[in-house]
Length: 258
Image (cartoon, rainbow, N blue to C red; front, side, top):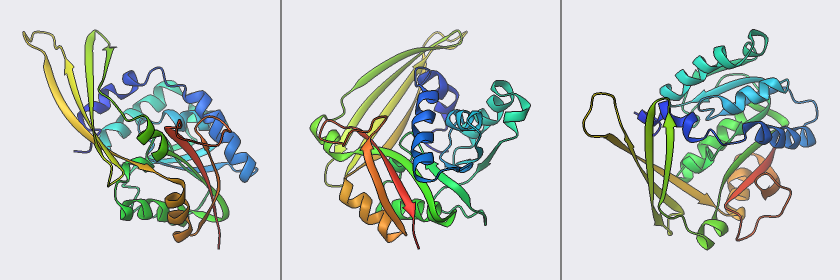
């Protein structure tokens, strides 16, 4: 089972306040700036499809892949429920690990959003994910992703957090406890989910640990260069501002080159 195994059913409730529409507008603007007219998209780590839905509404045809079968099942169900048939036909979802994906076709653009790249914890994982992006782009194609940014993470380290939400009639408590590994550029976030079930006298619970990597600009530029990209832009996520030690999340625009 992947890290989004049991928690997949709660994922959209946990991030119900996330502005997917605004994020899609932001990424769409980046794509159109660097690859005007781009309309076909490969979405690496598409999760429950919420970004993909927004890109379909903006005229893209999207091929979304994820290694969590549970997340993809939610994407398939919500596509029929949230999108009219005409837009739904713009979307295809498939079960793949992004590190080894080869579809024998290319796209105008590739995206990997909501920290998908930060889930690539080893150097080989990162290079393999970038190789997948490269293999699905023609020269001049654009790869856009976001990730945790090292200066921000080290200046403002993650702390224990608690989030309470309602899943239908069911209250859910998520407790997050991070463990830093500064010599590996990693944070292990241990999530404990506690929820009540009808007919049970005591709450049920389960745990997941998500290993997250944070990056620095030179290592991103080098990894992209090795895999045949040029890093065209590095900005604070959802802004045009140059990232600094206050920036926890950054967006990267990479161009596929010969």
